[in-house]
Image 1 (cartoon, one colour):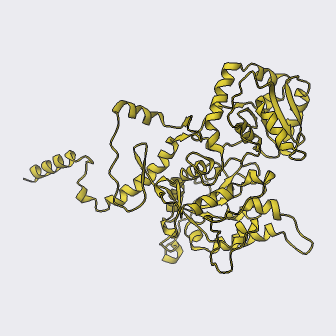
Image 2: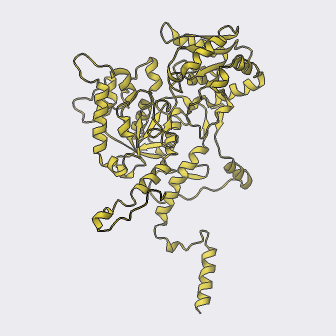
Image 3: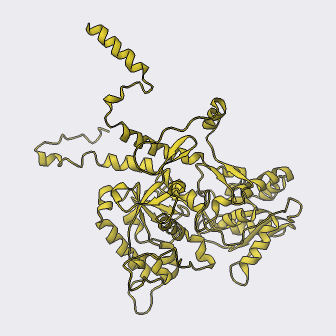
Length: 490
């Protein structure tokens, strides 16, 4: 009888679609929520990004998912989990907006740096962006303004009538959040307040960093995770110079890793964000291979320290080539407009490492649909886990680029058909690097949030592992003797 009952129970369990009797899983609803959160990370790398004019698309989809869709036909969406939380379907899977808790820091850390002050009658530390948005300073300040756009996007999520269409939403309870956002405009602080005034012992930038470290390390959210689930923005290479050594467990949003030790910042835990391009976008670009008369374009600082020695070497190699523009330039004396005209009329634009591996020049080239030639061996690129830069960029090792005639011969070998493919791809992916408010599907703001979302699973694993023994006292306090381990044991 026992054998027969066991056999019937086995048959019943194999008939179930999930191979388990759901009555044995009292917490299956919670499990589904956790699985959907994991799918959110996976599905973010399979998003179809529509360009701003609706005429072209950059399709960043997983091949296996695409083949499955073609082979099986249209699949019915899964029923919504009864969680009461906002969900949406992306490529047949549930996708929840990234939930972010943002500290209500004093305005001196963010919009106060833009000379904004809260009204006397208001207790809010934030501007009412429905009526007034403090403007960000122009010029070269703009290239590191990622902190401004992400903060605005979080504030806007509170007023959105359709949260289902958002990539990120702000939550007021930190226990409900996927990550914790630190709204310190560190790049702006460096650019505007890094000099010491005569009546100061320390610059305002250093004082703000010290106060930020003191505030964060005292918060229960930081203590709970050791800072691992915090987002800290330090896009300017010199921003957060003093605080980064204390805040390193957090996820940094950076331009590159050029001035960071590997144990402080690395591609596994941190996110590379694009610069905001400074030159004008090439709207209604009707140019072609033949109409762009300049073969290769570079304008900027030629003599640089650190990794920028290649600039001066290339200057001597290329300065006499008749269809190459290689000259010194800056933002002064109408430099931005001149650079816009030069890039818009060039086939290829040089992006050479300077003081750091990255520069704004790459994103200026993308906005100009001028095929970037990247000579920077240590460069890290935004969204490279979902975007293949080799489709619209030319990469050259520095050791090869400074060889006699190597670079110019390589560029001349790229013919009209191959260049046109890269030029067309540039026009498709250009919206991925556009910062704007309000953010739009597939723009730089949403792409950065998606890059952040793809880190959440690994962060949660680190935090959960760190809690394994947190409820137990150390072994000595429990009266247990530790076993000595020989030095050569490992």
